[in-house]
Length: 381
Image (cartoon, rainbow, N blue to C red; front, side, top):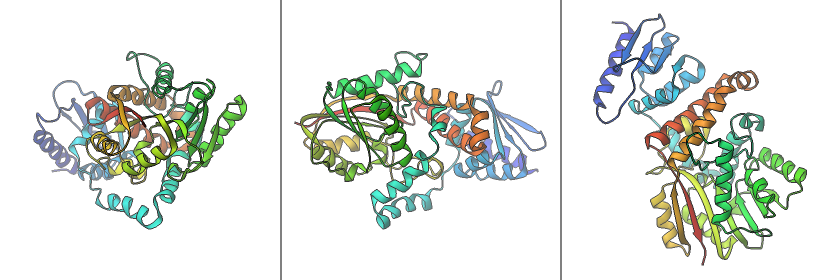
C-alpha cells in the first residue's frame, strides 16, 4: 500500500472517531501523483493538494504545527474554501509542551516587561504597509468591530465600536484618557478629533513613529509614549482608560487591575475588548510560534470577572462579540487574500500564508464557537 493510501485510511479513521461530535464538509485529498480520495458525501468544498512525498509525511504526522509549516513552505496547498479547510485542525493533535514551557520560562528569566518588548516586536514591527493592506481603510483598527448587519462595510462597523467605547467611558472634550496599545493610531485619531486628550502607550518603535505622525499631521491633543503599561507612572490619574485588544497580552489579571486602579480617577471608567476562550493557554503552537509569541493568552471571562470581584471595580456591562469578531476576521482575511500578489512580491509567500492561516483560522474559530470575544466596562467607585 502506498504512503498516500495509508494516509487516506488514517484520515478516514480519525474522521470516524469524531463522527457526530465534529462535522466536516466534504473535501478531497490529492496526492503528489494526482491520485485523489474524497472524504464525506457530496461535492468537495475544498481540496488539500500534497505537492511532494514530504507533504504526505507532514500530513501523516497528524500534528497541527507540522502540517501548518508544510503549508507555509508550499508543500501543501488548499484549493477552495480555506476557512472550511481549517476546521480539519480538530482532527489533529498539538504537541506544544516544549513551546508552552519556554513561554513561561522567559518572563521568569528576563522579566515580563523585557519579554513583552521582544514578543511584541515579532508581530507589530512588520512594516505598517503590510497591515494597511487588510485593516479597514478609515481607522486601521486591529480589534473587533461592531456590525449592524453581515454586509455592513468594515469601516462603518469599526467607527461604531470606537463610538461605543467613548460612550461607555462617558468621554467628553477635554477629558484625559489613557489608551493601552497604540496600534496604528485608530483610537488616538478617533478620540483626538473629538477634542479628547489621549495618552497612548505602545512598546513597538514602529507603532510609536506611525502614531506620532498622525498626531503631528492633524495637530491632535494627544501623545504616544514608548512604555509598557505596567511601568506607566505619570503622576496623574486619568478620567478613563481604553484597552482595545491588549488584555490578551496582560495575563496577570490581578496585577493589571491594580494598575488600572492606580491610574484611574475615582468614578472613572475602564473599557476593554478582547478575544476569549474558556480555558487559559488554549491557543496552539502555530499561533504562539508564528503569530503571537509570549505568555499571553486569550481572555478567560470567568477568571477575569473573578479578579474583578476581588477588586474595588464595579462591573457595568459585558457584551458578547463572538459573531462580530467572526465578521471582522473574515473581512480582514478577504482583504489579505485580495492583496496576495502584492504581499508575496514585497514580503514573500511565507508571510501571506502565515496571516492567512491566522485570520481565516480565527474566523473559523469565532464562527464555530471554539473562540469567544467580549466587551467589558468597569467603573472605579
